Length: 311
Image (cartoon, rainbow, N blue to C red; front, side, top):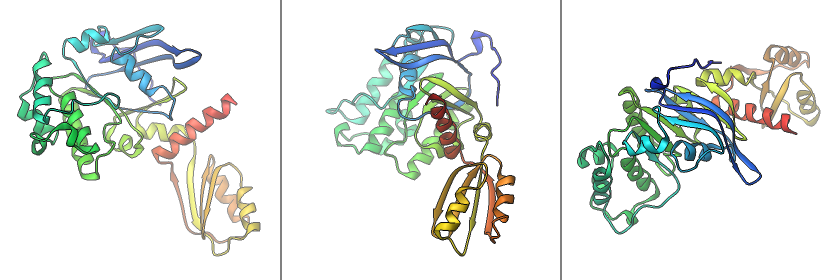
């Protein structure tokens, strides 16, 4: 796993230092410490209730921590936002309905300390063809693209995205992430929370996994997969009766098993030992494959292991 090195405050886009946030008896963020750096594209992952939204709220100055500190480019979140250094695309909050897309984007540009041209913002967000349409006549995916336009109305140094591609079709999602990669290539920091783990795997330079408000894992997608400590084993068997299935479930080092028709899919913390024991059952597995976990499977393995510790 990647170990964070301490960088001078001037080189940090975001810094959380032992940040805690409670809502009554619920601890949404628990002593969270992390740094984000310019030019990084960072995915924030976690199951429902992991603290992702609370973390973003703290980063954007929408909530204050009960303890610890949050700094954005060396200042408070509100100071960074007032200076026009932060753009955000959030799930919460509605859009003004009785205006056109162009009017809404023009308003956002006029309020930004370092605005872009309205037509450039519309084109970058892929909503030029929607410019004269009333906002309340848009589909869910179109609304998301307008929210993106509002988040990039000026020359931000940090872009924060909460489930940005919800409601977008595949083609639009691909174009959206191509734009985000361009933003990062220009030195901007992009932080996004998502339930689409394939997006995190394909897009993010770095992946953060939150669980119960704590940082469980921090590294590249490959490092997160390695942290799960398990591998996939899949094969086909001609005969899969109840007796054989019980034998398979008794194989050593299994963390999961799925039997569908004649296909068996296993997860094992020691794939070599599992396969050796499999051949000891006097079976002939066809199409045998052993591979590392995907990011989604690694995410489930890491959070499930953490839940087991809490029990």
